[in-house]
Amino acid sequence: MPRIRKGDKLPSATLYEAQPDNETNILDLVGHKRAIIFGVPGAYVPGCSRVHLRGFIEKSTELKLLGFEEIICVAVNDPFVMSAWGNARGANDKVRMLADPTASYTKAIGMEVDIPELGGIRSRRYSMATVNGIVKELFIDHPNVKLMCLQTDGVPTYCT
Image (cartoon, rainbow, N blue to C red; front, side, top):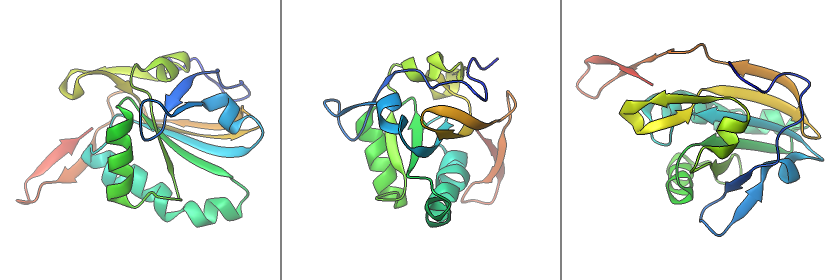
């Protein structure tokens, strides 16, 4: 069960952008802004790439016109992988790619899930709208939700 709820203040937690020495405290980053934060199980995971990250990239202009100053993707990956994934998908100035390599932020908000096929502890899929570090809206995928994806050979498979 998620620990964070609508109306809660985000925890003070360190995330990393692009490289291990570029630390960012999530609460400091969004504490005086309107922000969208979304979590995914991992970089390059087919469903996360094809649906979640792509959707926020495509809607980034619209979201910024609605007053959101930051759109942030968080995954339990290292900062190099998150940066490369963002660059490969065209996130650039649209979505900030923040790494949570030890899952400390993910655990602090109660979104951790054990996915052995992806290496163990990862994030559940969620999105939240925050204002000044306070969660105003929160959407969480149900546990064990799988997305239908198509392999290049046309054989359907399930993606996390």
